[in-house]
Image (cartoon, rainbow, N blue to C red; front, side):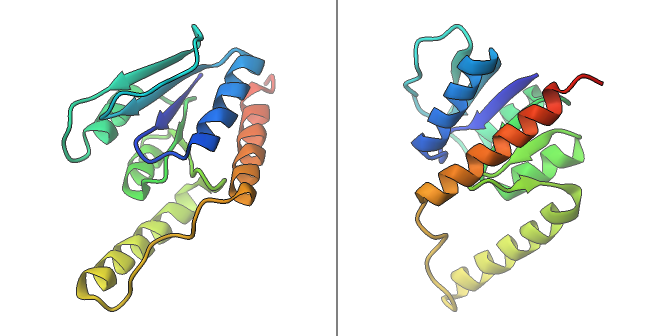
Amino acid sequence: MKIWIDADACPNPIKEVVYRASKRLTISVTLVANRPLKTPASRLIQAIQVSQGFDVADHYLIGHAARGDLVVTGDIPLAAELIERGIAALNPRGEMYTRDNVGERLATRNLMEDLRATGMVGGGPAPFSERDKQAFANSLDRWLAQYRRPD
């Protein structure tokens, strides 16, 4: 079991929550980004820098994450691909992507992208908050408890 972070757009407070869980439970964490990243000195935490380009980090995550792993990402198309492959995906705001909700999230995302492109709506998601961080920490703890429970 490993935690992967789609790190280019992941808020720093979320990375800190994952680092603490890694230390507490001795779980490996790999951050993937197309820029250099600073990570804590730990044998459990590594950063992979992929080349620049559209979806390069996504392709790396799809190619390396496995069943039993968790990927932290706000990228809905990436989450949909991971779910299709049976890999758990968690949004930085604490929402676990599932087969039941990822299709709806993807359709909504595509609609909003089209509306923004035509100028009918503007803006993006609300600013990341302390409440979002807490929701993420709670979801991560639930997932870790479920995964680590003996069968």
